[in-house]
Amino acid sequence: MSKIDFVDVTLRDGHQSLWATRMTTAMMYPIAGKIDQAGFKVVELMGTVHFDACVRYLREDPWERIRIMAKAMPNTSLAGAVRSKSLVSFDLVPDSIITLWIKRMAANGLRRVVIYDALHDWNNIAESIKTAKKEGLEVQTPLVFSISPVHTDEYYSMKTAELVKLGVDCIYIKDSIGLLTPDRVKTLVPAIQKNLNGIPLEIHSHTTTGLAPLCYLEAIKLGITTIHTAASPLANGPSLPSIENMIQNIRHLGHTPNIDEDIVKEISNHFFYVAKRESKPLGIPVEYDAFQYDHQIPGGMITNFKSMLSQRGMEDKLQRVLEETALVRKELGYPVMITPFSQIIATQAYFNVVLEERYKETSDEVIKYVLEFYGKPPAPVEQNILDKILKSPRAKEFQKWKQPQPSLKKLRTELGSKLSDDELVLRALFPEEHVNATMEASPIKTYYPTQTKGQTIIDLVSKLTSESNLKYIRVQKEGLSLTLKKKIP
Image (cartoon, rainbow, N blue to C red; front, side, top):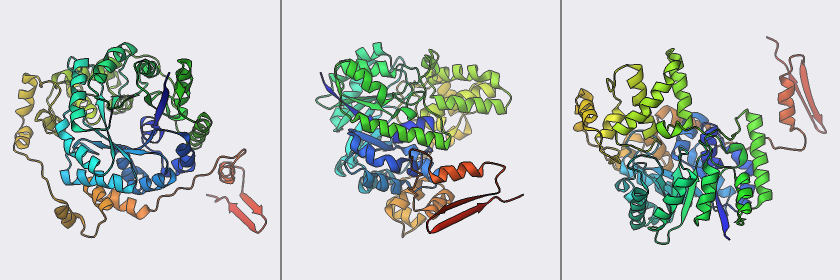
Protein backbone atom coordinates (compact mmCIF):
# COMPACT_ATOMS: atom_id res chain seq x y z
CA MET A 1 0.00 0.00 0.00
CA SER A 2 1.13 3.58 -0.71
CA LYS A 3 1.48 6.92 0.99
CA ILE A 4 -0.84 9.41 -0.69
CA ASP A 5 0.29 13.04 -1.01
CA PHE A 6 -1.94 16.08 -1.29
CA VAL A 7 -1.79 19.26 -3.34
CA ASP A 8 -3.87 21.88 -1.56
CA VAL A 9 -6.03 24.14 -3.76
CA THR A 10 -7.92 26.01 -1.03
CA LEU A 11 -6.04 29.28 -1.58
CA ARG A 12 -6.44 29.12 -5.37
CA ASP A 13 -9.13 26.93 -6.93
CA GLY A 14 -11.22 26.66 -3.79
CA HIS A 15 -12.15 30.32 -3.52
CA GLN A 16 -11.99 30.75 -7.30
CA SER A 17 -14.75 28.16 -7.59
CA LEU A 18 -16.89 29.19 -4.61
CA TRP A 19 -16.03 32.79 -3.64
CA ALA A 20 -15.48 34.36 -7.09
CA THR A 21 -11.73 34.62 -6.32
CA ARG A 22 -12.40 37.17 -3.56
CA MET A 23 -10.33 35.70 -0.73
CA THR A 24 -8.05 38.44 0.58
CA THR A 25 -4.52 37.92 1.85
CA ALA A 26 -5.75 38.78 5.36
CA MET A 27 -8.12 35.80 5.21
CA MET A 28 -5.21 33.50 4.30
CA TYR A 29 -2.37 34.83 6.40
CA PRO A 30 -3.44 33.83 9.93
CA ILE A 31 -3.59 30.14 8.96
CA ALA A 32 -0.55 30.15 6.67
CA GLY A 33 1.76 28.83 9.38
CA LYS A 34 -0.50 25.84 9.97
CA ILE A 35 -0.78 25.13 6.24
CA ASP A 36 3.03 25.18 6.16
CA GLN A 37 3.17 22.54 8.91
CA ALA A 38 0.47 20.24 7.51
CA GLY A 39 2.70 18.36 5.07
CA PHE A 40 1.19 19.31 1.72
CA LYS A 41 3.30 18.36 -1.28
CA VAL A 42 2.40 21.67 -2.93
CA VAL A 43 0.05 24.55 -2.09
CA GLU A 44 -1.48 26.30 -5.08
CA LEU A 45 -1.58 30.04 -4.45
CA MET A 46 -1.88 32.12 -7.62
CA GLY A 47 -3.60 31.37 -10.90
CA THR A 48 -3.67 34.04 -13.58
CA VAL A 49 -7.24 34.97 -12.63
CA HIS A 50 -6.05 35.74 -9.09
CA PHE A 51 -3.76 38.46 -10.41
CA ASP A 52 -6.80 39.95 -12.12
CA ALA A 53 -8.95 39.75 -8.98
CA CYS A 54 -6.20 41.25 -6.82
CA VAL A 55 -5.72 44.26 -9.10
CA ARG A 56 -9.31 44.93 -10.22
CA TYR A 57 -11.31 44.13 -7.11
CA LEU A 58 -9.23 43.53 -3.99
CA ARG A 59 -6.69 46.33 -4.55
CA GLU A 60 -3.84 44.05 -3.50
CA ASP A 61 -0.51 43.88 -5.25
CA PRO A 62 -0.42 40.20 -6.31
CA TRP A 63 3.37 40.12 -6.17
CA GLU A 64 3.27 41.35 -2.58
CA ARG A 65 0.75 38.59 -1.77
CA ILE A 66 3.20 36.01 -3.11
CA ARG A 67 6.06 37.46 -1.03
CA ILE A 68 3.97 37.57 2.14
CA MET A 69 2.70 34.01 1.77
CA ALA A 70 6.08 32.60 0.71
CA LYS A 71 7.66 34.10 3.84
CA ALA A 72 4.85 32.68 5.97
CA MET A 73 5.25 29.20 4.44
CA PRO A 74 9.01 28.66 4.04
CA ASN A 75 8.74 24.86 4.14
CA THR A 76 6.10 24.52 1.45
CA SER A 77 6.32 24.66 -2.33
CA LEU A 78 3.91 27.37 -3.50
CA ALA A 79 2.57 27.23 -7.06
CA GLY A 80 1.46 29.76 -9.63
CA ALA A 81 0.25 29.44 -13.22
CA VAL A 82 0.90 30.61 -16.76
CA ARG A 83 -2.04 30.36 -19.16
CA SER A 84 -0.57 29.91 -22.62
CA LYS A 85 -0.23 33.14 -24.62
CA SER A 86 -3.16 35.07 -23.15
CA LEU A 87 -2.41 35.00 -19.40
CA VAL A 88 -5.16 37.10 -17.79
CA SER A 89 -7.57 37.98 -20.61
CA PHE A 90 -8.54 37.08 -24.17
CA ASP A 91 -5.75 39.28 -25.54
CA LEU A 92 -2.49 37.77 -26.72
CA VAL A 93 0.39 38.92 -24.53
CA PRO A 94 3.86 39.83 -25.89
CA ASP A 95 6.47 37.13 -25.34
CA SER A 96 8.63 39.61 -23.42
CA ILE A 97 5.92 40.02 -20.75
CA ILE A 98 5.28 36.27 -20.47
CA THR A 99 9.00 35.69 -19.93
CA LEU A 100 9.20 38.45 -17.32
CA TRP A 101 6.04 37.12 -15.62
CA ILE A 102 7.70 33.73 -15.12
CA LYS A 103 10.95 35.27 -13.87
CA ARG A 104 9.08 37.40 -11.34
CA MET A 105 7.18 34.35 -10.10
CA ALA A 106 10.47 32.72 -9.21
CA ALA A 107 11.99 35.91 -7.80
CA ASN A 108 9.03 36.55 -5.50
CA GLY A 109 8.98 33.08 -3.95
CA LEU A 110 6.99 30.56 -5.99
CA ARG A 111 8.65 27.18 -6.53
CA ARG A 112 6.25 25.43 -8.91
CA VAL A 113 4.60 26.84 -12.02
CA VAL A 114 1.70 25.27 -13.87
CA ILE A 115 2.10 26.07 -17.57
CA TYR A 116 -0.84 25.05 -19.67
CA ASP A 117 -2.57 25.38 -23.00
CA ALA A 118 -6.19 24.25 -23.22
CA LEU A 119 -5.84 23.41 -26.93
CA HIS A 120 -2.85 21.18 -26.10
CA ASP A 121 -0.85 23.11 -28.69
CA TRP A 122 2.52 22.83 -27.02
CA ASN A 123 4.08 25.32 -29.44
CA ASN A 124 2.31 27.97 -27.36
CA ILE A 125 4.13 27.03 -24.15
CA ALA A 126 7.47 25.50 -25.20
CA GLU A 127 9.43 28.72 -24.56
CA SER A 128 7.66 29.30 -21.24
CA ILE A 129 8.72 25.84 -20.09
CA LYS A 130 12.33 26.59 -21.02
CA THR A 131 12.24 29.91 -19.17
CA ALA A 132 10.73 28.39 -16.05
CA LYS A 133 13.33 25.60 -15.97
CA LYS A 134 16.13 28.18 -16.28
CA GLU A 135 14.67 30.06 -13.33
CA GLY A 136 14.75 26.92 -11.19
CA LEU A 137 11.00 26.40 -11.07
CA GLU A 138 9.40 22.97 -11.04
CA VAL A 139 7.28 22.83 -14.20
CA GLN A 140 3.95 21.05 -14.20
CA THR A 141 1.75 20.85 -17.28
CA PRO A 142 -1.81 19.53 -17.30
CA LEU A 143 -3.61 17.36 -19.78
CA VAL A 144 -6.93 19.21 -19.73
CA PHE A 145 -9.66 16.60 -19.83
CA SER A 146 -12.63 16.87 -22.12
CA ILE A 147 -15.07 14.62 -23.92
CA SER A 148 -15.37 14.72 -27.70
CA PRO A 149 -14.58 12.52 -30.69
CA VAL A 150 -11.09 14.06 -30.58
CA HIS A 151 -10.28 13.71 -26.88
CA THR A 152 -9.69 9.96 -26.81
CA ASP A 153 -7.33 7.98 -24.59
CA GLU A 154 -4.98 7.73 -27.58
CA TYR A 155 -5.04 11.53 -27.96
CA TYR A 156 -4.00 12.05 -24.33
CA SER A 157 -1.36 9.34 -24.60
CA MET A 158 0.15 11.10 -27.61
CA LYS A 159 0.07 14.50 -25.86
CA THR A 160 1.81 12.95 -22.85
CA ALA A 161 4.68 11.75 -25.04
CA GLU A 162 5.01 15.24 -26.51
CA LEU A 163 5.15 16.82 -23.04
CA VAL A 164 7.82 14.41 -21.87
CA LYS A 165 10.03 15.57 -24.76
CA LEU A 166 9.59 19.17 -23.60
CA GLY A 167 11.19 18.29 -20.26
CA VAL A 168 8.35 19.02 -17.83
CA ASP A 169 8.82 17.81 -14.26
CA CYS A 170 5.26 16.70 -13.57
CA ILE A 171 2.03 16.07 -15.48
CA TYR A 172 -1.49 16.01 -14.16
CA ILE A 173 -4.96 15.22 -15.39
CA LYS A 174 -6.90 18.48 -15.08
CA ASP A 175 -10.66 17.91 -15.08
CA SER A 176 -11.86 21.46 -14.51
CA ILE A 177 -15.41 20.76 -15.70
CA GLY A 178 -15.96 17.60 -13.67
CA LEU A 179 -16.44 15.27 -16.62
CA LEU A 180 -14.33 12.31 -15.54
CA THR A 181 -16.07 9.08 -14.62
CA PRO A 182 -14.57 6.11 -12.77
CA ASP A 183 -14.88 3.98 -15.93
CA ARG A 184 -12.99 6.55 -18.02
CA VAL A 185 -10.27 6.78 -15.38
CA LYS A 186 -9.68 3.03 -15.75
CA THR A 187 -8.73 3.46 -19.42
CA LEU A 188 -7.33 7.01 -19.44
CA VAL A 189 -4.76 6.68 -16.65
CA PRO A 190 -3.03 3.57 -18.11
CA ALA A 191 -2.95 5.23 -21.56
CA ILE A 192 -1.13 8.23 -20.09
CA GLN A 193 1.13 6.16 -17.84
CA LYS A 194 2.63 4.18 -20.73
CA ASN A 195 4.27 7.37 -22.08
CA LEU A 196 5.30 9.08 -18.83
CA ASN A 197 8.88 7.81 -18.91
CA GLY A 198 9.21 8.15 -15.13
CA ILE A 199 7.54 11.57 -14.81
CA PRO A 200 5.02 11.65 -11.92
CA LEU A 201 1.29 11.90 -12.66
CA GLU A 202 -1.24 13.69 -10.43
CA ILE A 203 -5.02 14.10 -10.66
CA HIS A 204 -7.19 17.21 -10.30
CA SER A 205 -10.96 16.94 -10.73
CA HIS A 206 -13.88 19.19 -9.80
CA THR A 207 -16.98 17.78 -8.16
CA THR A 208 -19.39 19.39 -10.64
CA THR A 209 -21.09 16.05 -11.31
CA GLY A 210 -20.29 14.56 -7.91
CA LEU A 211 -17.98 11.87 -9.29
CA ALA A 212 -14.53 13.31 -8.55
CA PRO A 213 -13.97 11.45 -5.23
CA LEU A 214 -14.74 8.13 -6.94
CA CYS A 215 -12.41 9.03 -9.80
CA TYR A 216 -9.63 9.78 -7.31
CA LEU A 217 -10.03 6.37 -5.70
CA GLU A 218 -9.85 4.62 -9.08
CA ALA A 219 -6.75 6.67 -9.96
CA ILE A 220 -5.09 5.65 -6.68
CA LYS A 221 -5.83 1.99 -7.44
CA LEU A 222 -3.98 2.53 -10.74
CA GLY A 223 -0.89 3.94 -9.05
CA ILE A 224 -1.44 7.71 -8.81
CA THR A 225 -0.15 8.85 -5.42
CA THR A 226 -0.84 12.61 -5.48
CA ILE A 227 -4.34 14.08 -5.51
CA HIS A 228 -5.60 17.69 -5.46
CA THR A 229 -8.05 18.62 -2.69
CA ALA A 230 -9.41 21.60 -0.73
CA ALA A 231 -10.26 22.19 2.90
CA SER A 232 -13.91 21.21 3.39
CA PRO A 233 -15.39 24.75 3.63
CA LEU A 234 -14.01 25.47 0.15
CA ALA A 235 -14.52 22.01 -1.36
CA ASN A 236 -17.35 20.31 -3.26
CA GLY A 237 -19.89 21.93 -5.57
CA PRO A 238 -17.92 23.47 -8.44
CA SER A 239 -14.71 23.10 -6.38
CA LEU A 240 -12.67 19.93 -5.72
CA PRO A 241 -13.09 17.04 -3.26
CA SER A 242 -12.51 17.80 0.40
CA ILE A 243 -9.30 16.55 1.94
CA GLU A 244 -11.22 15.26 4.97
CA ASN A 245 -13.43 13.00 2.86
CA MET A 246 -10.51 11.75 0.80
CA ILE A 247 -8.46 10.95 3.92
CA GLN A 248 -11.24 8.66 5.15
CA ASN A 249 -11.64 6.93 1.80
CA ILE A 250 -7.89 6.56 1.24
CA ARG A 251 -7.47 4.92 4.62
CA HIS A 252 -10.41 2.61 3.86
CA LEU A 253 -8.51 1.41 0.79
CA GLY A 254 -5.55 0.57 3.01
CA HIS A 255 -3.34 3.51 1.99
CA THR A 256 -1.74 6.10 4.28
CA PRO A 257 -2.67 9.78 3.93
CA ASN A 258 0.63 11.67 4.09
CA ILE A 259 -0.75 14.65 6.00
CA ASP A 260 -1.21 15.90 9.57
CA GLU A 261 -4.92 15.40 10.15
CA ASP A 262 -5.06 17.50 13.32
CA ILE A 263 -3.69 20.49 11.43
CA VAL A 264 -6.13 19.84 8.57
CA LYS A 265 -8.96 20.27 11.12
CA GLU A 266 -7.47 23.58 12.27
CA ILE A 267 -7.25 24.79 8.66
CA SER A 268 -10.86 23.92 7.96
CA ASN A 269 -12.03 25.48 11.23
CA HIS A 270 -10.31 28.71 10.22
CA PHE A 271 -12.05 28.85 6.85
CA PHE A 272 -15.42 27.91 8.37
CA TYR A 273 -14.90 30.92 10.62
CA VAL A 274 -13.95 33.18 7.69
CA ALA A 275 -16.90 31.98 5.62
CA LYS A 276 -19.32 32.72 8.45
CA ARG A 277 -17.78 36.09 9.23
CA GLU A 278 -17.72 37.19 5.57
CA SER A 279 -21.10 35.60 4.67
CA LYS A 280 -19.37 33.43 2.05
CA PRO A 281 -20.96 30.24 0.71
CA LEU A 282 -19.77 26.81 1.77
CA GLY A 283 -19.23 24.08 -0.80
CA ILE A 284 -21.80 21.30 -0.67
CA PRO A 285 -22.01 17.99 -2.57
CA VAL A 286 -24.04 18.19 -5.77
CA GLU A 287 -26.47 15.85 -7.50
CA TYR A 288 -25.42 14.14 -10.71
CA ASP A 289 -26.26 16.15 -13.85
CA ALA A 290 -26.02 14.20 -17.12
CA PHE A 291 -26.59 17.38 -19.19
CA GLN A 292 -23.21 18.67 -17.98
CA TYR A 293 -21.59 16.21 -20.39
CA ASP A 294 -23.31 17.86 -23.35
CA HIS A 295 -22.77 21.59 -22.84
CA GLN A 296 -19.66 21.25 -20.59
CA ILE A 297 -20.06 24.81 -19.28
CA PRO A 298 -18.44 25.51 -15.89
CA GLY A 299 -20.98 26.17 -13.13
CA GLY A 300 -20.25 29.86 -12.63
CA MET A 301 -20.94 30.66 -16.28
CA ILE A 302 -24.43 29.18 -16.11
CA THR A 303 -25.22 31.60 -13.29
CA ASN A 304 -24.01 34.49 -15.47
CA PHE A 305 -26.19 33.31 -18.36
CA LYS A 306 -29.24 33.25 -16.11
CA SER A 307 -28.53 36.82 -15.10
CA MET A 308 -28.00 38.07 -18.67
CA LEU A 309 -31.12 36.35 -19.99
CA SER A 310 -33.15 37.63 -17.04
CA GLN A 311 -32.16 41.20 -17.89
CA ARG A 312 -33.61 40.67 -21.37
CA GLY A 313 -36.72 38.93 -20.09
CA MET A 314 -35.56 35.71 -21.78
CA GLU A 315 -35.11 33.37 -18.81
CA ASP A 316 -36.94 30.64 -20.70
CA LYS A 317 -34.14 30.47 -23.27
CA LEU A 318 -31.44 29.11 -20.92
CA GLN A 319 -31.95 25.53 -22.11
CA ARG A 320 -31.59 26.65 -25.74
CA VAL A 321 -28.37 28.52 -24.94
CA LEU A 322 -26.89 25.44 -23.29
CA GLU A 323 -27.89 23.23 -26.23
CA GLU A 324 -26.50 25.81 -28.67
CA THR A 325 -23.22 25.84 -26.73
CA ALA A 326 -22.77 22.12 -27.39
CA LEU A 327 -23.42 22.70 -31.11
CA VAL A 328 -21.08 25.70 -31.42
CA ARG A 329 -18.32 23.75 -29.67
CA LYS A 330 -18.70 20.92 -32.19
CA GLU A 331 -18.65 23.34 -35.16
CA LEU A 332 -15.54 25.12 -33.86
CA GLY A 333 -13.47 21.98 -33.44
CA TYR A 334 -14.19 20.80 -29.87
CA PRO A 335 -12.05 23.15 -27.75
CA VAL A 336 -11.90 22.25 -24.07
CA MET A 337 -14.45 24.33 -22.18
CA ILE A 338 -12.16 26.18 -19.81
CA THR A 339 -10.93 29.78 -19.86
CA PRO A 340 -10.72 31.40 -22.34
CA PHE A 341 -12.54 28.96 -24.65
CA SER A 342 -15.52 28.32 -22.40
CA GLN A 343 -16.29 32.05 -22.52
CA ILE A 344 -15.63 32.32 -26.27
CA ILE A 345 -17.84 29.37 -27.20
CA ALA A 346 -20.64 30.05 -24.74
CA THR A 347 -20.82 33.75 -25.65
CA GLN A 348 -21.19 32.83 -29.31
CA ALA A 349 -24.01 30.45 -28.40
CA TYR A 350 -25.67 33.26 -26.44
CA PHE A 351 -25.46 35.59 -29.49
CA ASN A 352 -26.89 32.88 -31.75
CA VAL A 353 -29.94 32.41 -29.54
CA VAL A 354 -30.61 36.01 -28.54
CA LEU A 355 -30.18 37.42 -32.09
CA GLU A 356 -32.21 34.51 -33.51
CA GLU A 357 -29.72 33.98 -36.32
CA ARG A 358 -26.67 31.77 -36.05
CA TYR A 359 -23.33 33.60 -36.42
CA LYS A 360 -25.07 36.86 -37.37
CA GLU A 361 -22.62 38.43 -34.96
CA THR A 362 -19.25 37.05 -33.91
CA SER A 363 -16.85 38.39 -31.33
CA ASP A 364 -13.25 39.30 -32.06
CA GLU A 365 -12.25 36.32 -29.96
CA VAL A 366 -14.16 33.86 -32.17
CA ILE A 367 -12.49 35.36 -35.24
CA LYS A 368 -9.06 35.09 -33.62
CA TYR A 369 -9.84 31.52 -32.60
CA VAL A 370 -10.79 30.32 -36.11
CA LEU A 371 -7.73 32.13 -37.51
CA GLU A 372 -5.67 30.04 -35.04
CA PHE A 373 -4.24 33.02 -33.15
CA TYR A 374 -4.74 31.01 -29.95
CA GLY A 375 -3.30 27.84 -31.46
CA LYS A 376 -4.50 24.93 -33.54
CA PRO A 377 -8.01 23.69 -32.64
CA PRO A 378 -8.27 20.01 -31.68
CA ALA A 379 -10.34 19.36 -34.83
CA PRO A 380 -10.84 21.50 -37.97
CA VAL A 381 -13.50 24.21 -37.81
CA GLU A 382 -16.47 23.16 -39.96
CA GLN A 383 -15.96 24.72 -43.39
CA ASN A 384 -19.41 26.31 -43.77
CA ILE A 385 -19.06 27.99 -40.37
CA LEU A 386 -15.50 29.11 -41.12
CA ASP A 387 -16.61 30.64 -44.43
CA LYS A 388 -19.45 32.54 -42.76
CA ILE A 389 -17.21 33.95 -40.03
CA LEU A 390 -14.42 34.98 -42.41
CA LYS A 391 -16.79 36.89 -44.72
CA SER A 392 -17.27 39.66 -42.16
CA PRO A 393 -15.35 42.95 -42.55
CA ARG A 394 -13.92 42.51 -39.05
CA ALA A 395 -12.52 39.10 -39.96
CA LYS A 396 -10.84 40.60 -43.03
CA GLU A 397 -9.09 43.11 -40.75
CA PHE A 398 -7.79 40.33 -38.52
CA GLN A 399 -6.49 38.31 -41.46
CA LYS A 400 -3.94 41.09 -42.00
CA TRP A 401 -3.09 41.44 -38.30
CA LYS A 402 0.15 40.29 -36.71
CA GLN A 403 0.69 40.25 -32.99
CA PRO A 404 3.00 43.06 -31.82
CA GLN A 405 6.08 41.86 -29.96
CA PRO A 406 7.46 44.91 -28.13
CA SER A 407 10.66 44.51 -26.16
CA LEU A 408 10.80 45.28 -22.45
CA LYS A 409 12.82 48.38 -23.29
CA LYS A 410 10.04 49.64 -25.54
CA LEU A 411 7.40 48.84 -22.95
CA ARG A 412 9.36 50.75 -20.32
CA THR A 413 9.48 53.73 -22.64
CA GLU A 414 5.70 53.59 -23.01
CA LEU A 415 4.71 52.68 -19.45
CA GLY A 416 7.40 54.23 -17.25
CA SER A 417 11.18 54.05 -17.30
CA LYS A 418 11.52 53.81 -13.51
CA LEU A 419 9.00 51.02 -12.95
CA SER A 420 10.07 47.89 -11.09
CA ASP A 421 9.80 44.64 -13.03
CA ASP A 422 6.78 43.67 -10.92
CA GLU A 423 4.89 46.88 -11.63
CA LEU A 424 5.86 46.81 -15.29
CA VAL A 425 4.12 43.45 -15.69
CA LEU A 426 0.97 44.76 -13.99
CA ARG A 427 0.85 47.92 -16.09
CA ALA A 428 1.34 45.93 -19.28
CA LEU A 429 -1.62 43.68 -18.46
CA PHE A 430 -4.20 45.73 -16.57
CA PRO A 431 -5.97 49.07 -17.03
CA GLU A 432 -4.04 52.03 -15.65
CA GLU A 433 -6.75 53.13 -13.21
CA HIS A 434 -6.86 49.70 -11.54
CA VAL A 435 -3.08 49.49 -11.19
CA ASN A 436 -2.93 53.04 -9.81
CA ALA A 437 -5.60 52.24 -7.22
CA THR A 438 -3.78 49.03 -6.25
CA MET A 439 -0.42 50.77 -5.85
CA GLU A 440 -2.02 53.52 -3.75
CA ALA A 441 -3.71 50.94 -1.51
CA SER A 442 -0.51 49.07 -0.62
CA PRO A 443 0.83 47.67 1.64
CA ILE A 444 -1.44 44.64 1.89
CA LYS A 445 -3.28 44.20 5.17
CA THR A 446 -2.56 40.87 6.85
CA TYR A 447 -4.51 41.38 10.07
CA TYR A 448 -7.68 39.36 10.46
CA PRO A 449 -9.74 39.11 13.68
CA THR A 450 -8.67 35.88 15.29
CA GLN A 451 -11.01 33.12 16.27
CA THR A 452 -11.19 32.57 20.03
CA LYS A 453 -13.26 30.44 22.34
CA GLY A 454 -15.83 33.20 22.50
CA GLN A 455 -16.08 36.30 20.36
CA THR A 456 -13.34 38.72 19.40
CA ILE A 457 -13.79 42.27 20.66
CA ILE A 458 -14.19 43.39 17.05
CA ASP A 459 -16.87 40.77 16.42
CA LEU A 460 -18.69 41.82 19.59
CA VAL A 461 -18.54 45.53 18.75
CA SER A 462 -19.68 44.81 15.19
CA LYS A 463 -22.67 42.87 16.48
CA LEU A 464 -23.58 45.50 19.05
CA THR A 465 -23.41 48.37 16.54
CA SER A 466 -26.01 46.57 14.45
CA GLU A 467 -28.50 46.82 17.33
CA SER A 468 -30.89 49.66 16.64
CA ASN A 469 -31.73 50.38 20.29
CA LEU A 470 -28.19 51.25 21.41
CA LYS A 471 -27.02 54.85 21.67
CA TYR A 472 -23.36 54.16 22.47
CA ILE A 473 -20.85 51.37 23.21
CA ARG A 474 -18.01 51.69 25.69
CA VAL A 475 -14.98 49.40 25.76
CA GLN A 476 -12.92 49.82 28.90
CA LYS A 477 -9.89 48.12 30.38
CA GLU A 478 -6.96 49.24 32.49
CA GLY A 479 -5.40 52.26 30.83
CA LEU A 480 -7.92 52.38 27.99
CA SER A 481 -11.45 53.73 27.56
CA LEU A 482 -13.10 53.81 24.14
CA THR A 483 -16.62 55.11 23.52
CA LEU A 484 -18.46 54.70 20.22
CA LYS A 485 -21.56 56.87 19.83
CA LYS A 486 -24.24 55.99 17.33
CA LYS A 487 -24.80 58.72 14.76
CA ILE A 488 -28.43 59.87 14.73
CA PRO A 489 -29.73 60.57 11.18
